[in-house]
Length: 213
Ligand SMILES: Nc1nc2c(c(=O)[nH]1)N[C@H]1C(S)=C(S)[C@@H](COP(=O)(O)O)O[C@H]1N2
Ligand SMILES: [Mo]
Image 1: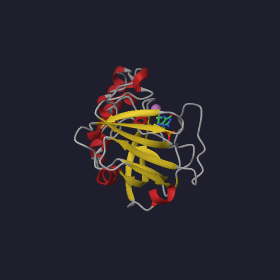
Image 2: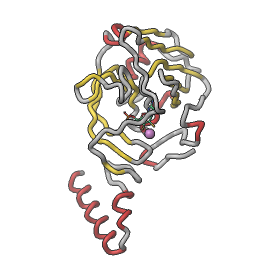
Image 3: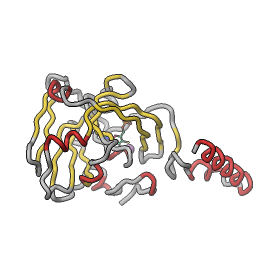
């Protein structure tokens, strides 16, 4: 894969030099970088101009809607859930990608085993402390790499990046991962979130360049 990537990069350079299409090198992507993305090593911060400050003793988390067992967790209760780690790439729709982020928290698979969604539940809406929302089909959340993260690269998740807890859904653009998450609602209807009602794609697949709805 490493060889293949190198080859493709070289081919792209060759083509760009020949045709003078410098931008294509940047926009084509490769085996790891989705189309239209460029790689960054920093970790940019994106929000609605407001970063909620939630002291851990006031943090409460709810899972409700079409589930057998609704849940309310305090911070301590959240931390007593089985801990899960996953390394993934992060793709923001504004075109930057950041590789190899080490996330730690509670897996969505574990959440499902606790709340047991009813068969009618086909959609999930995430609600945050800054009133941000985002929606996904349940099957997108029911994946091995989806988690509620409290740590990034072995440190507690900073307030800038959505701490105490944010959602990570690596196979979708990053706006599908709610920072400062407060609530998860399971439903039989697909209620659109903040960016989804403002023209962003409902599905948000980086590999399909699926940015706008
Ligand atoms: N609560 C909340 N979650 C959010 C957002 C937001 O504004 N509020 N922005 C989204 C967008 S557009 C992106 S790209 C990522 C950015 O995460 P970062 O600031 O850690 O890079 O968070 C997503 N989750
Ligand atoms: Mo974004």
